[in-house]
Length: 570
Ligand code: BDP
Image 1 (tube, helix red, strand yellow):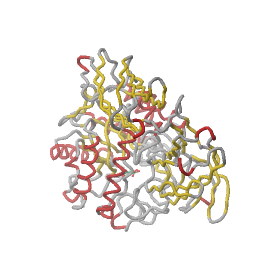
Image 2 (cartoon, rainbow, N blue to C red; image 1 turned 90 degrees about the horizontal axis):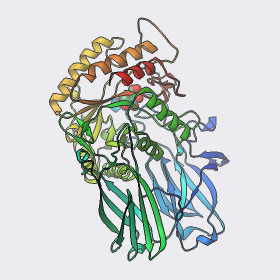
Image 3 (tube, rainbow, N blue to C red; image 1 turned 135 degrees about the vertical axis):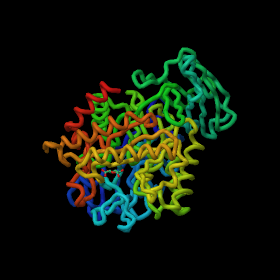
Image 4 (cartoon, helix red, strand yellow; image 1 turned 180 degrees about the horizontal axis):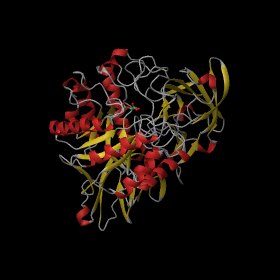
């Protein structure tokens, strides 16, 4: 599925703006894209069902064309109607879906788009709702709303809704593989697979890349081809060069479709101890974060993206993880353009034994597929994470995660696949049964915070032992995807005490210094980039305060410490 694109041939209508929202019979204005929760006080804990409504027009001239509606993401369960006809149903947040609405569109007249949305998270859903207290992994037993994860469960049409008008002859998918390129010879090898609609058969596919052009007669709906580029400019962190790939479907000289993609040529490899970008070892320094902001909730918000990238650069980070779900697609566009690496994470958080059944596994497999299909062409994506902190010491976790690993591997052999585990610690009861399938072992550890509270140095000794033993068990590169401490912005204390900015700064600095010495660690991500809203519970004074920046992006002491450290030491 290709994301809509507005160009000389394709027409895209952005339906962002003010829609109508009906909740329990009451109608009022609401913004799309955004979560509904913070636009009205009485909707803060609303789970729906609610109905969003928008009128739209498609000019009469477009009769005979294909009309597609594309939702960037809706949280969480939804049914879409056009002029009263059901056109789509979707049951996962954070991932796009589309519907061909050609047959239901009234050309030149008013059309009604209605989206019925519910955000009632259940035990065993993605992400996971109320879970029996004994099986809770992350949430607090009596938190409200009840979740088995640590961020506020915002609902709504959280990303852009687009209408795209195309010809029947169209490009439906593109896959780019640059993994066989030879950085040492400055040779770029770009393998392409292009999928087209049935109506395109018999027409010409024209492909242009790096001033080379190919014309291919379309005989079937899937076309493979390859470009070799000498003296290629590789996509690197400090010089993230992007080439424009231009695809056209033509009938003699008539242009029927056009699609353009910015691609980066680079290779990713890994062995027992290291991760390589263009054959050079790469070390990930950065953060786990969230895509959320006051009022907006979880929703696409361009100023926040720009601000976050500017802060990532300012602080000297080179990467982040889309914890704990795929973010808006523009995050990856910017990461490609600015040279920031991304661990792209599936929306699988709070996964417990209640997920380990064939039906839920099928959904999870589908989510992994949909994430990879959406993001596969971004050079910035360095690895896929299939889940965050599942109950992966449960015997049934093994086949579940093996299936996710195999799904990801089948779709993409060019990137490592990881699972983020908080288990597999020295205590044998925490032995993770799934990590063995993954290319890279990612771990979340809170020494000096949840354990060894107030005792950073003792905590670090335990962390040292933990990671050494972990490596001996797995013999795979390790990314520490989370560690950190809450700091209430403006609270200072000496000697450093939990919740003070000093304590967070000391814990972060000492942990990085310790881990940086380990030759099998290929990345360290601080949890978290910024403070974020959580469900109400006694562990969280309104927010999770582990941010290095506040929720509105003011730096805490740790930000300055990291900035010095990351800009100078490595
Ligand atoms: C980890 C989770 C993350 C939490 C963090 C914390 O992956 O979502 O916010 O801990 O407790 O367990 O701050």
